[in-house]
Image 1 (cartoon, rainbow, N blue to C red):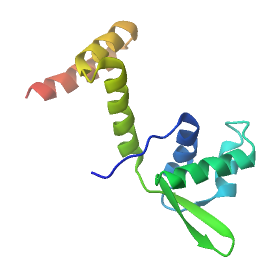
Image 2 (spheres, rainbow, N blue to C red; image 1 turned 30 degrees about the vertical axis):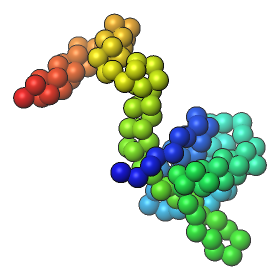
Image 3 (cartoon, rainbow, N blue to C red; image 1 turned 135 degrees about the vertical axis):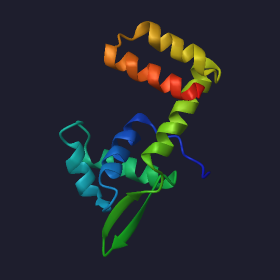
Amino acid sequence: MKSVPHISDAEWEVMKVLWARAKTPCTANEVIEALEHQTDWKPKTVRTLLNRLAQKQAISYSQENRVYAYFPLVSEDECVRYETESFLKRIYGGAFKPMLVNFLKEEKLSPEEIKELKSILDDKTK
C-alpha cells in the first residue's frame, strides 16, 4: 500500500473539497470559493495549504498556461483509515477494544444504532 501522508486539520478541509470534486480537477480559485463560506481564510492561506499538500504528495496538479488544477493522489478512505490507525495507536496503544468500550460508555446511541452495531458484531463472529 502506498504511503499516506499526515494531513493537518486545515489541510483536511482542502482535501474534502478536492475529494468531493475528484472527477474534475479544481483550480485554487474554485477551492477558495468552496471554502469561503466555511472558513475565514484568506486566499493566500488556501494556496499555502494546496502547496503543502502537493509537497506531501497528497495532491498533484496539472498546469495550463498559468492556471493550476489540483486533484487528490490519495483517497478519502485511505486517509480515514490512516487517521483512525494513528488515533488508535496514539491514544489507546493500538488496542481497539478499550477505544470501543470508551465510546460506547460515553455516547448515547439510538435503538437503530445499537441494532446496527449488534449486526456488525454478529457478522464478525461468523
